[in-house]
Amino acid sequence: MRCPNCRHTSSKVVDSRHADEMNAIRRRRECDNCGTRFTTFERMELSPLVVIKKDGTREVFDRAKVLDGLLKACEKRAIPYEEIEKRADKVEANLRNLNKAEITSNDIGESVMEELISLDQVAYVRFASVYREFKDVNQLMDIVKNLEKGKNEHEI
Image (cartoon, rainbow, N blue to C red; front, side, top):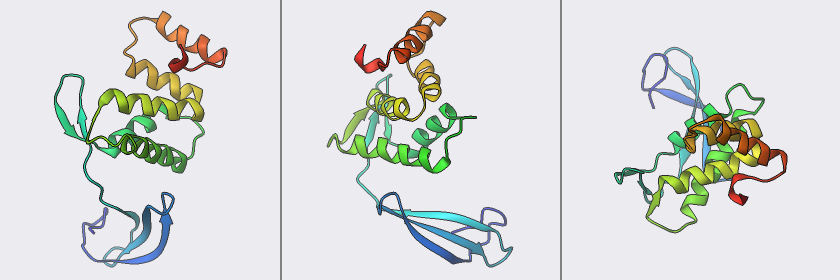
């Protein structure tokens, strides 16, 4: 493991804990060269999920992209990073529970929206506006009105 600060290859483990409901190990490390502390995660390696994108191309599922989308949706909201990571884990688990080797980008988007609606309504609207590719403000207003009524987009 290379130090993110000086790129030195030697570090020592300062603390280890289980993470992600016992599916990963979180290790706190300290670089032997510069003393920088950083965190690494060890996760089980699972069979790859292949994502079929809207244009028909295929690529390997990347949890980091889901996490990035959640982070952008939750930007400047009072949501702890650990909670966002849990939601990314739930999205991946939901997709793996479909028991399919290939999933669609639509499957991913719907799963992310299900997690966001219960997490934060503003983050949900942000994500939905990009994911649904709203063409005008009326589509956005429809989502907001349905949130006020206690419905989510899946019930519409």
